[in-house]
Every structure is written in C-alpha cells, then in structure tokens.
Length: 199
Image (cartoon, rainbow, N blue to C red; front, side, top):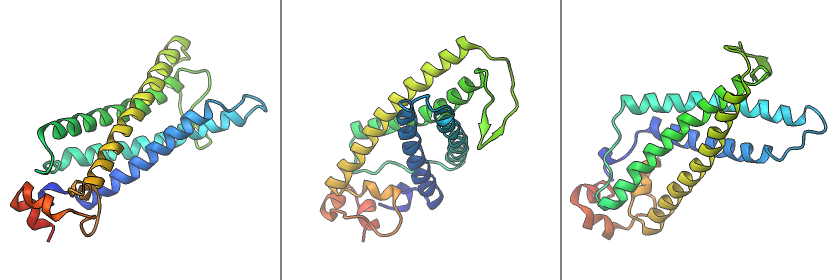
C-alpha cells in the first residue's frame, strides 16, 4: 500500500476518534431509552449527558468533514474489485450523511421541547418556541437514522474483517506503522505499486 492509497495521520486519528465516539454514543442512546423515569432526575441526567456529548461529537464530525474536503481521499487499492470499491464508496457516503443528520436532528428535536438544551449543565439560548409536532418528527428521524447508522457501521466492520482475514493490506489504509499481517503474494498480484510499498 503506497502513500497514494493510505490516509494521513490526521485522517487516521479523526477516523478512530469519531468512530469510537459514535459507537459509544449509539450504545448510550439505545441504553438510556430503558432508563426509568423514577426516581426523578436520573433519566433526565442521562439524556442531558447524551445531548452534551452529542454536541462534542458533532464538532469532531464537522472537523473530520472539513479535513476531508480539504484533503483528497486516497485512491482505493487495486486489490479491491469494482463491486467492492462501489460498496465501500457508498458505505462511506451514507455514513457521512448519517453522521450529519444524527446530531442535527437530535439538537433540533431537543430545541423544540419545553426544556432548555444544557451543555454539561449550562443552558443554551432558545431559538424558538416549543413545538410538539416538530419535536416528534425530528425524534422519529433521529431514531430511524440511528438504526440505519448501526446497519452501515455493521457493514463497514464486516468489510474491515473481510480484509483482515484476506490479508490484502486494505486495513493498512487506516493504521499507523508497518503493514498489518499482509499476504505479499496477494499484493504482488494486484500491481507493482502496491507490492513495492509493502517491502
């Protein structure tokens, strides 16, 4: 895998930071739905924490998107066939779409409730009056996109596992250091540039 098919260190850092944060946030989001409303305050505290961390993750996602727009993504390696490249491309596009819609729908949905949005305890300004209908619409969008995002992450992880098992070097695009358990014979069949980069 040569430099033209690998992400730089900043992109790798943002990938893992955002990825782990989103997984944790999704886990928290699904778990806190079952938190009982009694005793009072416990459920609200978890929801406020979820909203606060969501805003932080939204900033990280924005940073990742800005970095992505300013730095061209490396070419997909030759060891991937056309179908795999198409699937990977659309999986990434949909992941970005969901990562934008998720925090946006969550923030807007919360802004239409009668309660102020708190950022780690500090109330944020209210932009408009409470609107139960808008709150419900955005809540449905938020929960629906969460389910789609889980499915997309599952596909993404299965793809990563496939490439780890195949040892074709694709996983190296998002890792630092030396090649990870690479099958040199497979890389050599893909093309001279990929082969040379693994020696």
